[in-house]
Length: 77
Image 1 (cartoon, rainbow, N blue to C red):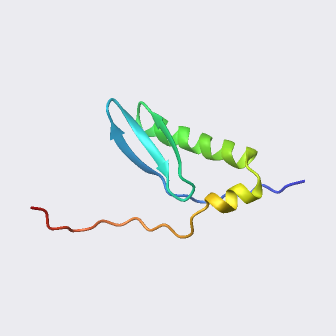
Image 2 (image 1 turned 45 degrees about the vertical axis):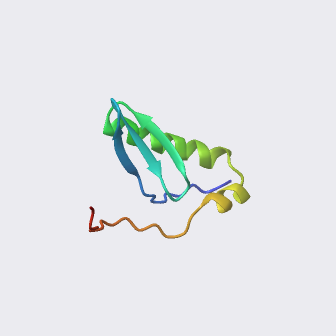
Image 3 (image 1 turned 90 degrees about the horizontal axis):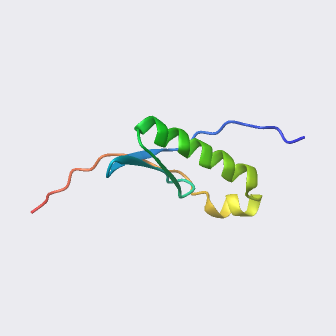
């Protein structure tokens, strides 16, 4: 029996047109929805389906190490 575990991943959600796009940068998996919450939930579902169907070598090849999300100050113009 495989023991299920919970892991935390990053979700980046941005407005696109009339909806929202969500991205998990650690695995390069994306989803979308009409609201932020729907987009977030759809990304969770996509990640769960990925882990249910992917073999270990695919997971290891897609999984990026540490991801840091920060803001930057850039001079423009």
